[in-house]
Image 1: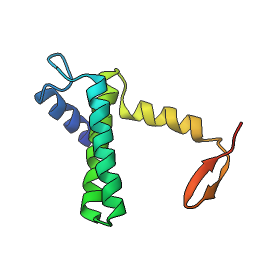
Image 2: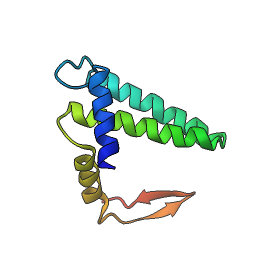
Image 3: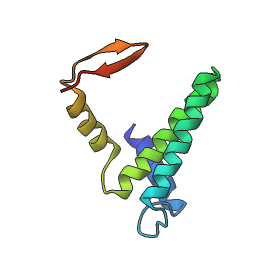
Image 4: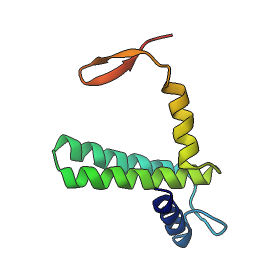
Length: 102
């Protein structure tokens, strides 16, 4: 996984999205992430499994690059999110976990 993430980061530097010569910006990268997530959503809705897999991967790429733009790693962001949800309680409603209100 670390090698894949480094490959994505290297690709982002080569494409001048991130890094010293990076011309990407956080807002545009977040827009790209939403675009990829929406494509994934559509693929799930239409049961197009190869596109679901591609969409998950493409969304992960955009998140890796967005995290880097803020000086974070994907692992740091995932750990932060896990620490928030680890003690969360709730229930399943129509196939979705709904957290309890505080």
